[in-house]
Length: 360
Image (cartoon, rainbow, N blue to C red; front, side, top):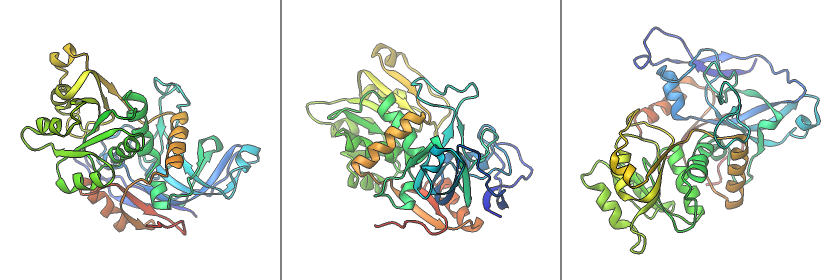
């Protein structure tokens, strides 16, 4: 029987509990007409997976394989020609369903159903196999190893929408600030921005992470814990463009207060997460300067396809912090520890089976 990793129920209240991992068996795949069965070769963690273990994510449940990011090879299909066309191909998995191409948000009345660990979607990628509709697959860019490919789907999609769709400033020569560099989404925004010819600046609580970001193409960065970091950042901006055009933020907190002073009039703050604080003040100073704050979460099936194509054309490689091999609870737990400690720079990956290893 195929195996997977899920969370095990123990007593505890949301926010105070930390559900242990357990290895479970899952049913043998029986694909319907338009379905494909993917033998997974790698899967990757996101912050939502840590929140699920803390019961801080909507619909947290048990017995459903964890993780939404995955890459693998289609090993069997249903009878439709669309499904059969994927047989034996290496594919990336669209991390959720219910959102086709609407710019405003998911068309499905129940919203976007992300894979991994919740009641909304029975599939997850921390498993030997997963069954998906043929229309939810994209051919995996050949230049990516399995570790890199697994690091792409959900973070790439989230970053694409936050930067390309919501920031309104994916334009060569624009000044973009990416906060909290080191996380998967922030790093993908950095890679997208650099590839598009933007001047990308970063913040972090760690100078080493800023230095690594500069090696990836960032123009510079500041430590947000230091007094007056906003003034220091402004001193780094080009002399002929002494302002930010947009901020792509995953922290929340005081970003409106600090950021609105750096942004041009009518500048955009595109927010995909609030890891520092679940709420923020919108100040009158931002109103008077016509600053816009735009929420951004995941993305549509069309945006997923656009993102993968951009990665293919630009030969971009997601940053992998560390990987472990196999459905081994103890090893996988160490990846969650990295995330809890915020020690990673890039994605945390689990390789599975015999896949395409990194060329690095």
